[in-house]
Length: 180
Image (cartoon, rainbow, N blue to C red):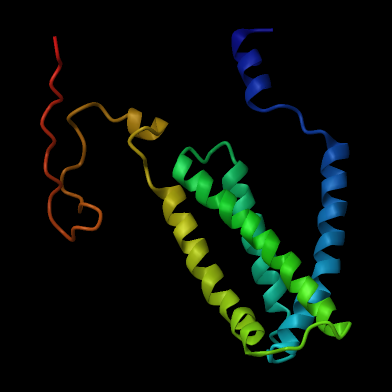
């Protein structure tokens, strides 16, 4: 085995097809079981029948996207990883809470009131904003990231806008002083 073969083997381990099959079955059954509860809570909260299926789709897609960004080796930014982790866990918690609320309403333990209607109605806009922010964080090149390290010192693009300061050149930083 050559050194490059060893690098390839550690960089891309073989897929365990039993794990992949188990994950596919678990994902499909969880999505189907959760779908009816989230769709039901959307209908109870006043969503039209023809649109209620979008609530479970929105929550599950956000959970999957966030988990992928959190766990992907291509996500280098620690800020993006933390945000993605919080979003993945939050989306999973939202799915659990939505299903619990639907079943609690069905069992007569919870009555639908305005807070439920407001929270359920806010999900699509909140998820859109969170997903857009997640994308922006993942796309940002951090000073400590491998892609930023490939830029030779002193050759940064000084013509791009400074974040949060509007258009204009980014001021050059003075060289760091070394103490003797």
